[in-house]
Image (cartoon, rainbow, N blue to C red):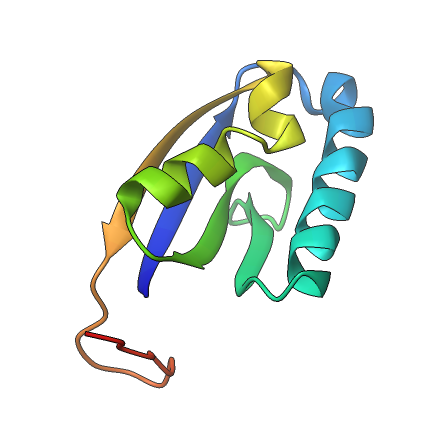
Length: 101
């Protein structure tokens, strides 16, 4: 299994994303309940103000699987965010990484 990072920036004003943000939180919780390793959060500026977008970290067997999963994210489906997905290769640090190669 590999780690993937989805970085998103808001296309719509944060106020317009409210219902989609709530649906996104439920989506992440549902995936966790199904056994997925996934975590989501938002970015804040130097004054601790949100609005810069967010990160989603997830584990998947390959890029195609991660991409297909991200496409089901209510934030992505809303069209209110621009996003990109990258496979992340941890090299050093505290994050436990399970390799099944």
